[in-house]
Length: 184
Image (cartoon, rainbow, N blue to C red):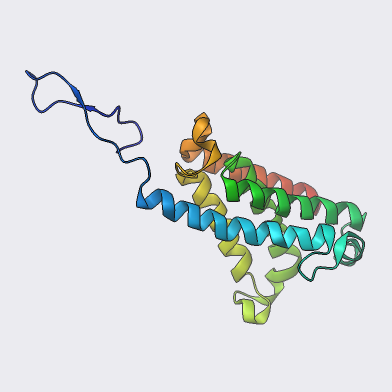
């Protein structure tokens, strides 16, 4: 059923409108859930590595030293911001809650990663390039544009349908956050 379809139909102008059956969950909704779960949980885990030292991560203090070496000062503060952006943005994407904000958080982190770490290494991940960061940023923009689907907490909110405004908001806010953290 189309996004703006009321669910009422009539076979002719002379017949009264009747309620047509609506499938509650579509294959597209399940596909979006799979996409959100995969990328969202990976990003939340990546943030947990930075923040808490989970999953083989270094934790906040060591990550802060790494951020300082990249030119972010104070390094620990920027590590906290990056870790929270990945952790909370990933969880938000996973459950489909505040999806445009979650997407913006992930986009901002990925822009920073591309500018400061992977951009100098070309495209492919095997060479340390931007491949992974671009993929995550594009998935975040796409989910903001499409909407998280019916199997998301955002289905109860107006922004849960996705669209140009949500995609532009996510990309713009993510870009602004990246620009501020990069000192642009």
